[in-house]
Length: 233
Image (tube, rainbow, N blue to C red; front, side, top):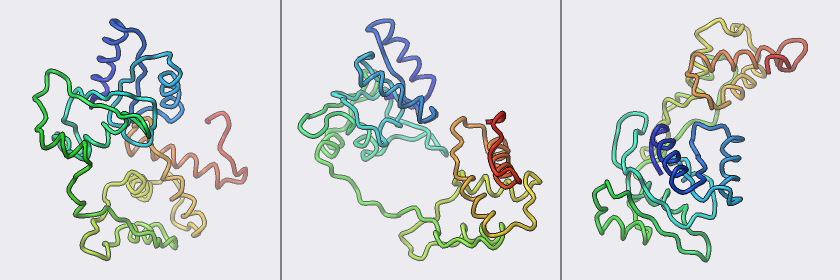
């Protein structure tokens, strides 16, 4: 497990030169590509899997051992050390049901503290002190009202408002441009636009570029033909 795309490919290339096959899993991959890489590993065509921490989310595979190439990651705001619960989440990919899995760190890293290892092996972690929250009672009477309802503050102090979500950023950008005719939209069309805004930016095009894709899909679905243009798709 590594925490940069370049490092993942570097390790995978090294393994292929030394030991044969290595599959690769990254959060930036589309679901189809990621599943294909998982199948390469699961089928035995590759003996090793090199991945980012995307491996720790929703992928259950026949992994005996997890090795960490790094214990630091960039979390979108800063470069920081992994929390013990994050190490456990990733290390927990090894071993399932009746099989005990193991984990280790690369030899260029300083040793883990015995207390950290014990906490990971025995699932002892600090309680969450806050929960990310977003309003689900949305107002579709206008784009401005929808954005306002997405910014409603949490009802309890242990909730924290989940800011900077991709879908909200796409909606905000579209509301300030002429990508769509948004001045006289019905509630039904606003609800449709919001659903389309939730399409993930798998290619990491950025807010502006991905918003043009969202607008294209919306405009096609709301035109008289009512479907996405085949040639464009």
